[in-house]
Length: 569
Ligand code: FBP
Image (cartoon, rainbow, N blue to C red; front, side, top):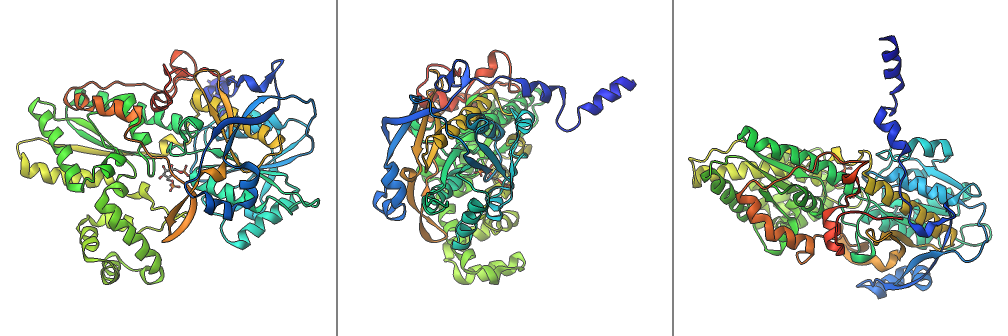
């Protein structure tokens, strides 16, 4: 007993048997980084691939240094020719935005590539820490402790957008105070947009010799909406999050014909795009999955969506199946065209009347809004349940995004479908439960895919920095054929969008394409999944054994791979 208690005490602070084993797990390394079995720097050469901004002239005007240096050409890692060693570089690394599994392995990869001759500094609490100059030196003991573990807890993160001249000036001071040569920004579309602006701003006259500080981005977000076709298959964290959600959805699906009692409405995180919902649908095959991009394309109203869901509920009830699962993407509300229109006016009105709306109750806020907003949009806003109205008036984040994770869309759909079925088919039994799976999936131990993907992205970043380049985002492609490392120019990804009512250059979110192989496969099969119970349960993500090598189904389909197995190294 005493010895068991002693053992149990040793598992505190993330040292469970599982966590201890996972730290020892070997992550496969892309062959280009290996020389005699050792990790080694690489050269970057023009690959023949390119990306183009739709607003190239505007981009050139705002980013003269980067556009001149990098253009729109994608670089590819190749074995290093010279034996020269780069020494004494000081590199800072930070997390930005929501956590995603695998971030610690990016840090580990950068650390291993920089090697003993250079120094890696961690920035605490994301961009906010960069502004404040809150940095510390990363040690090899830290890397041993964090390797293959989930979350962003080693450094912390935040959603500060570096935008004012004072903030840029403060970053310059941090660079000088810490004698930085480079900054690595691990973040999503907004954070990598910020990385591009930083790279331009820091491109010269920062260091004593008049040279600049390099800035390199890393594609992170569980949402999967930072991807560039064949040039960047997916952002990291997507695989782990979707595997966690698919396990939970699979378990609920398995419960439905067992208890035959409930319709489960499950909202899945993924702020704007429906990649997460689509991936989970392909992994589990529930009766209904909403895809926001399709709703927008077909110009569907909220009432159309309710009718479609009700039809399936009624048809299944006729077969004695008073149960099922409806998967709802987190951001669906912003994609329903009538809602989009209303939210655009609401966002603008809220921004313009911030002080008047402050500290008012909902009824008072509605009065203020109705005096400025158009009648049609105001009618739609007022027709929504008050719990939805409240959430729609919540503060936007620093990048101007509505906090959709706080809006209980799954409850709204349940209420409206109930109302519809009561009128259309009162005899149908429709008992419901609602769920929101989001935070459960962002910080779990990375899947083998994410652990390997991120470690190699980290190695890529370290190598890009050692090669002296700036203003790129690291990428890892050809995942079924050994892997290929690319450096994609950040400025070529920038396009004009309206944010806070103004034109801004940003990295566009990659949405689900309705002509993509993944969506087409889903569309071809979903009617059968609605009629019969054809679901499957993918089970918990595996770190060892045959199921561990599986990559996201949407990635394999959209990249045109012949199977689901990763083959790196
Ligand atoms: P990032 O885009 O920063 O990776 O964050 C994505 C996300 O996980 C979204 O899916 C979700 O809407 C959001 O974070 C919620 O985060 P928070 O609780 O910080 O608002």
